[in-house]
Amino acid sequence: MPFVRCSTKLAEISCRRQDQALMLMNRKVDCLSISYKIQNRIRISDFRLNIYDLQFLPAPCLPVGRGIVTVTVILLKSAFSMPANLTPQYLEAELKFKQAKTTPEKIKALEVMMAVIPKHKGTEKLRGQLKSRMAKLKEELQKRPTVGRAEQVYNIKREGAAQVVLLGLPNSGKSSLLSRITNASSEVADYPFTTQKPVPGMMKFENLQIQLVDTPPIQLDHIEPGFPNLIRNADALLLLVDLTDDPVFQMEVLLEQLNDMRIQAVGKGTVPSLETGWACLRALVIGNKCDVKDAMGAYQQVEERLKNTFPILPISAKEGMNSDELKKEVYQLLDIVRVYTKVPGKEPDLSEPVILKKGSTIDDVALSVHKDFAAKLRYAKVWGSGKFDGQMVKRDYRVSEGDVIELHI
Image 1 (cartoon, one colour):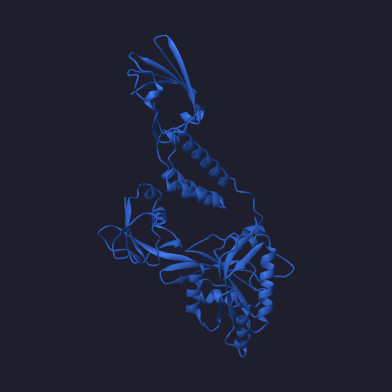
Image 2 (tube, rainbow, N blue to C red):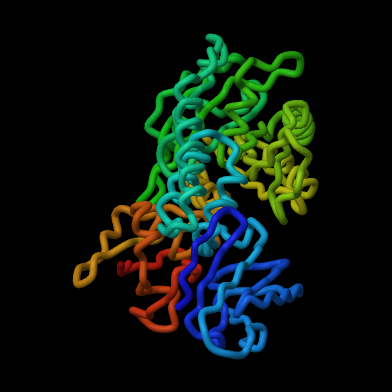
């Protein structure tokens, strides 16, 4: 093989055989100029070509005869950069990093990028950039801005599989509903504005927990600082209306107030793309106090008005009517799936599901277990949605509700 001594733009190659081709490995060359010297005669050959991957310069480019040929190659600077050869897993993690909204989400995506990036000379600079970016994000996370007391009240720590916020006008029954279906104790009274601050509670649905957050009633003339951020950070909304007090008007007020906060609630259909600064959340409309006389007549009016835009469910928080159905509707609203992992040769633990967004892949399952699994994963076996139990699948296989996954690294 030729011996190469190279600077930034020059490479001098000595060939023992004059018919030996100049080999360029993993280079892209836009312009190549070659001059060679043999037996005190100088010939110059200039031409343009593109070279990808493993390409050989044809032998006729070199003179015929015996002796040592000295070939001076002038290349573009880009020709000497090593290729990164980034994997699809890295590019997918990079896309999630670009789409991340919060600093913790960016850090999580960056950790995945650093775990799956190929380790070779071509990625040295990129790996250094990732480490530098990670250090800046962690420093940014530590320097949290000062938050006012009012905003601190609305800073509710997320727990469970998802966070769902309850919204409604005064006396809509939010506190009664929270007390009915969670382990939380929210103050309940017949007078309005009983709830003065957010109250979280955990709702059990089968083998997982979902966090519900009761909030102060919506007011037409005032929005508390921090209230919009609580709603924006939620995974979904429950919009409560009192079926005994013009529920159609209540829905109009709720949607108008959300719009003032630059938040769009959607029920059915595809989530629309919005302008920068807007948030879009799935929502379920709940008609409360359906046990009261003539309340179902009002429910039918609301249902007729909203049937094409929002899912709607009648309940009675006081009597516990449709509580189980409500839990199912909340779970479906979240667009998540439960899958289970197992160790080869052992039974799966069905009591602790892995919670993922619908459309997630085997790669996402591996990342949820540990970031190193994504880099080392060779294949997986699936019980449930596969063509047969124990089907061997690749990392881009989409998982379904109830699948059992066996990861092999």
